[in-house]
Image (cartoon, rainbow, N blue to C red; front, top):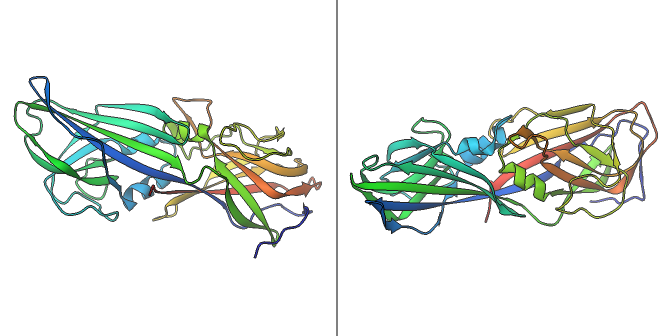
Length: 319
């Protein structure tokens, strides 16, 4: 049962007993272009793949590296079994190739994506290919991010070049704020949270994921609704967190937990805030903010107790 009160008054340490949960949904698609003597003789439409449980868990486990790190190697095979989310390898593995190029931060607003490409020279892969996967290491099993049967099997001869393109999309679970009931010192309240456009942009922009950097994390005292365009808290208290940490990955989880802890000197009617899930990369100085808002203000006058906010970031597949 949710209990609503006009204000939450806490002379003690202000600490949520359960994390605020926000989510990303991922989906991807492959395209194949076969040429002979420089002329396109087969080009498929983009085809949806299945992102594996293994792939989602691998992203959740990353610390201090970019999402693009999972899109390193393309595997081709000749298997025909139906892909499932529990797959850990191709049905019939044949070969792998290192990524030729990658382009970041494509798309817009709630549909940002990374595009990776693999270019095979004439004679590199001769055969009839019926399945494909992306992997983050050269191992032949236990490392595939996704798997797909090729709708139109691609047959290549020694005279054919082949280009494989893969788009990995990140979207918010919802464009409206997610509501979680959290407990603070045995009192329940509703906390709203929202993944911002800036967060999506930098998630696929080669920024480092789950990186421990104290950049742009604030609590706020202002009013107002949460918006996907936000890059700051409402009326921010500019005191930075005294501690910010990415918790160790829980084996087998589809989430990662992060927290910010503000010093005891922070006082006021805390209504909202902003916390990052990532940090530096080629987009140094940019942020990956998730904004949040308390259903009722946290009124704090005690200068001996700290404030802590816990955030759980969950990864899943788009419908």
